[in-house]
Image 1 (cartoon, protein in one colour):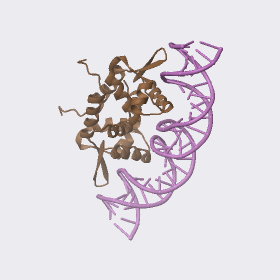
Image 2 (image 1 turned 90 degrees about the horizontal axis):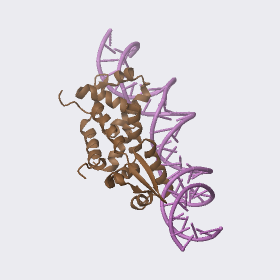
Image 3 (image 1 turned 180 degrees about the vertical axis):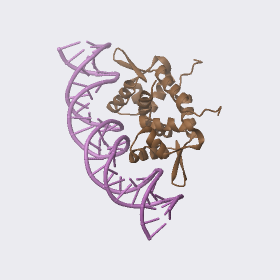
Image 4 (image 1 turned 30 degrees about the vertical axis):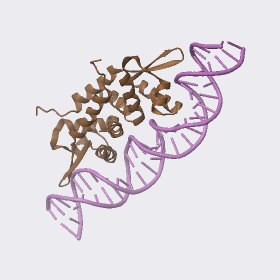
Length: 97
Length: 97
DNA sequence: ACCATATTTCCACTATCATCGAACTATTTT
DNA sequence: AAAATAGTTCGATGATAGTGGAAATATGGT
């Protein structure tokens, strides 16, 4: 992961609603959470929520999968881990110094 | 660290210039880097750079310390580590599941 | 006091983001 | 085929953010 890609991901996580959404998704693991469930739990109007979710999708932090009428939002741990990896490697103090 | 505070910090890191600045500061450790050095190395106009730096200062990721005419920018590892801690605890997959 | 250096603040401008109701699309049920 | 459910896209608006030149501030040197 390069700096620009990492910055884009951080930017999307850098909004309380989106960070909350991602946090909520992580809690429920690989099976994902329906958009509607997020809407109720987080109390965000549908259209606003939809924009936030697609922002997360656009940087690969979330994937969506349809099952009938229900759209599940699934956290993409791999992307998140790459972000964490970049931060650890490039932006953490080297305590051996 | 709570979600809102974390989101604010992530937001500021979520810009390539600012992430680059922070990364550069981390490289040089506790002694810090003069604003002017950042300006040359990163090739950002002074006023723009100044705005980016104060954004980082505003969320506690950077501190500034004057020595004569030179203002040193010093990364605040504690804040950064709190952000990392929040992300690890609240947004990482629990692999024991 | 004056000049040079280092950096910030002011100002104006453009661009992107956030929000949300209303209209629309997709899918299932009856 | 109509109605119900789930979610998205449209469209408009207000709010923030990004940018950088010019003017201002701070400090040190002569």
